[in-house]
Every structure is written in structure tokens, then in C-alpha cells.
Image (cartoon, rainbow, N blue to C red; front, side, top):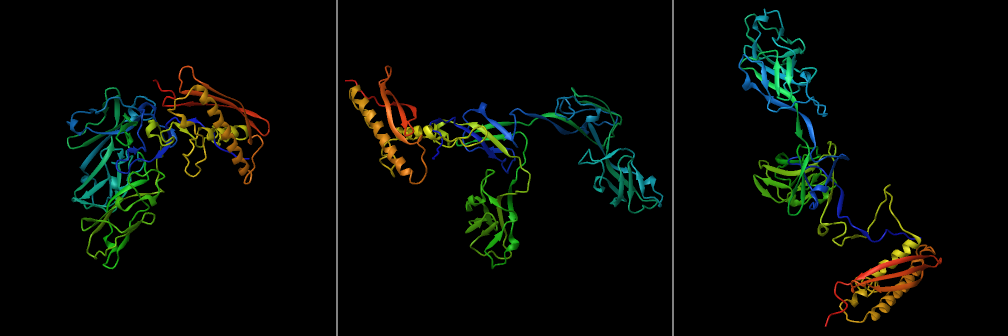
Length: 495
């Protein structure tokens, strides 16, 4: 029994799940393999989840409102109106969803020390981190204590009560200062106007930052260029591909060595897809400089990061390399794009509009034909093929195209077309006899003869012919064949 895929499937000119990662320069751009023909028919997925074009998220924003501090005010206005609670459900913020961070610089704590103490308590609390306002514990890097203007070591910090324990005890007359961040108490907010009231009145010299959630764009747009299109995201995405600029490899040379290894591997080409293999990297896609002058290496092994120069740099020479590499252990956002292309740019059908390739059903199983359907497919393939177009088998196909441009009466073409089809059936039978030497051909698939062959010329277009026949198998089963011929050059020329 033989199998083959179905014939005459019209191409939709649609690229399905073209996989990418974002570019390693801006981490926002995806370079597609072709040109998008319809911007409204693009589907972008990130990690197998549809990512809508006008997507928005509630993002944590930091506003520096220090310029609004007068020493008398406790109300501040942020730059962006409409404050949200960060749950991405379009819910307005409450007082617990806004953090007002105030930095106190060199607060004088000298009076707390008598020579026997190593504990100081800040005037304001709760203490918070400069870098992580939601941190439950602070590190010694979040607070700076100076004794006589020299930074000293901190043993522990109690952020809730503002207690700081020093490793050493300051002397009685030492000047002790502390720099820290604390969380102001928010009394009320107006999320629609971006107005925030706090209990404290910061003094001139204090630095005031307000953290809040605001709705920002996190979608994408399309940029169409001459040879390809780009998907550009509003916000950066995760990539496992990186660009290394001017990595210094000078230490690997001593005047006797002409090769070196990059720190990172494997090396990949610029704008590589997720499945681009390192072996496709070529010499011109890396930049090696010797004392600031670009040189061309002799060879490279992209998988191991080995670069062979062919020259022997001296110990005091400066050798640098710029390259792209992929870190398989790094988290990555897999970006899949479905989009429509113009028929002239379609890589699936090669501009012919039809697919004679594998197809799959809804369960992902390969669609196969057999028995009578396989027989019909063989007959149609042979019939529509142009004889002589297959250079390896010049006998394959029919000569129906040879009648284009000829001027004969209609009764001449009908028997000619019939004889071509009957001849095609005889050749198919001969091929199947040869096929049985290597594999089993079922009786339902084995050609016997044609019945009721009809050739009819269209009443509306004299260049259009309909051909119908019953294809009979050796199992005495029949399947109807219906095909057509449309000649681009008239068969009859007007005199």
C-alpha cells in the first residue's frame, strides 16, 4: 500500500508560528522573515499566549517631587493622573497602594551617644530601601552612618522602629550622622488628579520620591521595510541572545599564540532566530580588533568560541572582539508570529498559489490518502504535468500545452484531449506494475481503465475546457475525475 499527501490545496499565503526572540540590542524588536501584507491580520503570541496589539499594564512609576518641597507643604502632585492599585483590573488606587519615600541626608544623632552606646534611633520610620521599597528587611547598604564624617560599620537594622546598631561605640564628643530612607504616612489620595497628602512635612534638602501604579502601553506595532517587517514591542522582553562589545582577550596572547577563546559561547549571527544554529555564523559577523584596527580572522568555531587569527599578537598588544552569543540557561520569551504575506513573497507555495506538500488534521496527524483517492491523485498529477518539464523523466506528463495558440476546429481538440488522457492512464498502469516490485499496491489503488470520458468546451470562454471521466480500479471501483484546461493564449485566432 502506498501513501501520499492530498493534491490541489490552495495556499493561504499565511506564515504560521514563525518563532523568534527579541533583538539583542534593544530587546524590543523582532525581525520577521518576510513582509507583512495585512497589518490587521497579524497574531503575536508570547510564550504561547496571544499578546494583543494595544495591550496596557499597570506599571510601578517613580516620580521625583523634590522640587515641590517648601518645608511647609505636605501635599504633592505626581506627573501622571489616574493612579491604580497594580492588580491590572483597572481599579483605582487607595492610600495603601502609594509609597512616598523620603531621603534624610546626614541627620545628626550625636546626642544619642555617651561613649557607652552603639545604638541610634532615627527620627523618622519605617525605614525602607532605596532600591526595593517593598523589602521586608534592610541590608547594611541601605543606611549610611558616619562618625566624624567617616563611614562606619553597621551590625544590624530594625526597619520598623528605626533602630541601627553599630559595630563600634562612638566616643562622647564624636559627631554621628545617619543617612536613610523612610516611608511617609499617606493620609489621602485623589487617584484621578494624582494628588497625594502625607502626614509629614519634608524639609528643604530632603529628597522625596513617590511610587505609584499607572497605566502604560505594553503592546506592539508593525514597521514595514523594503525586504522584511518588524514587530516592535513597547516594553523590553526577555531574550537569551546577547551582544558583547569589545571583549578584551589580550591576556591570551604572548607572541607565540594565534588563537583565543571568547568568554561566552556559542557565537551566533546577528538577528538570529530562536532556531538559528551557531554553525551558520560566518567570519564577517564578528569584529576582531588588534590595537584598535579591525582584522579578519582566519577561522572560527562558533560552538566552542575558538577564534583563529593566523597572526601572533605580542604580549602588550590589545585584542578585542565584538560578537553575539546565546545563553541557553537564561530565561527567554518565545515570540511566535502569524501573518499574511503577498503571494509573490510566499515561501510556502513559491508564488504558484497551490500547496502540494504535507498537511495535518486538527489533531496534528498527517493527512494521507489511499486506495481510490490515491489512484485519482496519481492520474491528476500525471495529467496536469507538462511533458518534458521533468528533465530526469521527460516522458512524464501530457502535451496538452502544445495546443495553445493553434487554430483548429473544436471537433479536433476533443479527441486529442481524450487520447492524451487515455495515454496517461496506460503510462500510470505501467508505473504501478513497476511499483509492485518494491511495495504493495492495493486493488483499489491499481489503475484499470477510464470510462465515460467527456471533453466539453465552455459556451462563454472558448479557451476553457472541462474534462470529466470515471477512473476505474482493478477492484472494479470507480471514482470521478473532474479537471479543467484554461489556455492563456486563444486556441482560435480571429481573421
